[in-house]
Image (tube, rainbow, N blue to C red; front, side, top):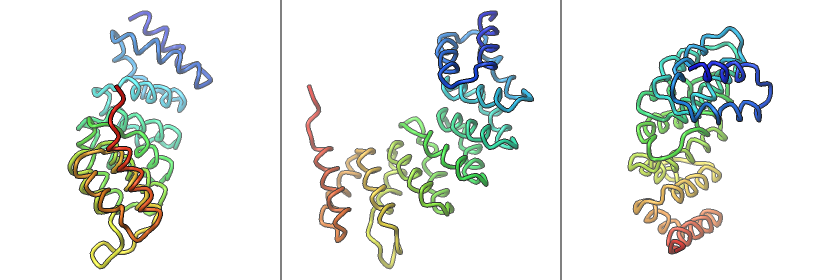
Length: 228
């Protein structure tokens, strides 16, 4: 635990990302005593809270979620960005409610961090909250990243939402920006499930040339045999 305290002092003082990364890498090898990190989230200096939040996300510390969630109200956007990213990286069921709050943050940058941080099948509990957030989000760039996050999750719920986003405009689905349809095609490629592949095959005949080309490329990639 003494070694952990020394490393945490270094973490607090580290002025650059590369120096923090070096401390992160050392701390990640030491599980004993890292619960002390959680208490540092209450530190008065914003940069300490940010550094610790980043590390907790890297460590995937599920037990830190309640303390991280409390910091979503921090006055400094840089802290909220780090907290949102950390929660997204942890990605367990316990982060669903805090991330719902983060996805309503007044800062576009904070909302973007949630989308960028989510990835992998372990985050399947986040699929439906992301779908709801996409419907409420006004910024197209954030919506695009949320769509790609659903592709990385790749759960049945996520894929069904992506199938709807990939469909052409019509009476049922209404008008959609082409860029978001393209993002949905890319996300279906990332999901790589049978349902995703079937949808991509159907989009190879889409009326939009960009969608057709993207779908054909995605299908070709998914059908390509894995390298030995």
